[in-house]
Length: 124
Image 1 (tube, rainbow, N blue to C red):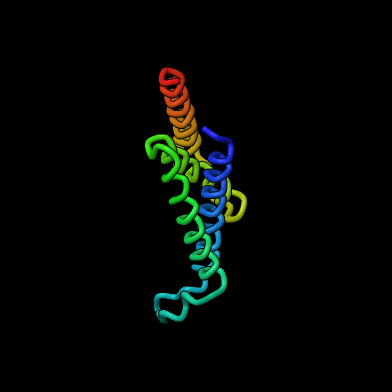
Image 2 (cartoon, rainbow, N blue to C red):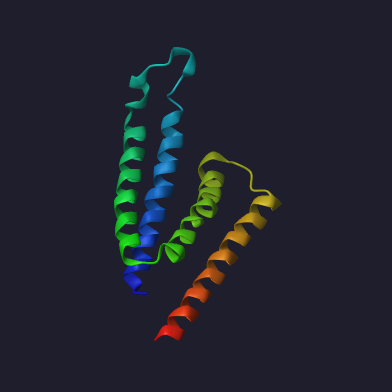
């Protein structure tokens, strides 16, 4: 796989994580007791939607070039990144279960990548 595909996957993860961070921050201005659709038109929520839209465009480009079964597991890294971001920005707890789950995600991606590399070497 070309290195620029990895860069694109990292960009997808970046836009995904930043979008979620902005959505969380923007959601603080939404009050259900005085609900109005206009509450969603704050700069943080609009920025979150823009990040998700850009993420979607980049993702379409990635899956056009790569096997979906190889590219998609990298998206699960967003869980690990969100765990770290949530701890830093929102003081959310990181538990042993979350650490173990994140470790399994990372191991799964490693095994998936090794399997893809082995498959490519057999076809070359």
